[in-house]
Length: 84
Image: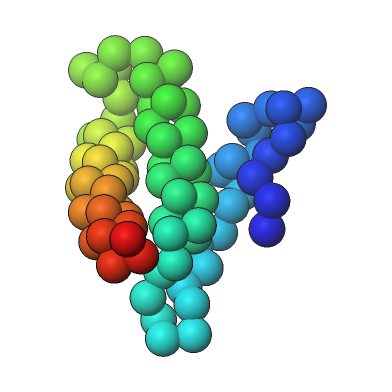
């Protein structure tokens, strides 16, 4: 799956699915794709306004994405170390 071209913009990043490999683990490309999707969702959260203006469910979703991003960075680091 290709990341969006410059002409397509970032709106397609939200549509990138998470694609685990055959063993159920993520390869670096799928981790990067999920990170891009999550970053795009986080940016949309902040475009809506201050955190205090958000619904509790939106804040909870933001927190969950933030934790997932941290986990993916750790996983990506592990995968890159294995590849090196």
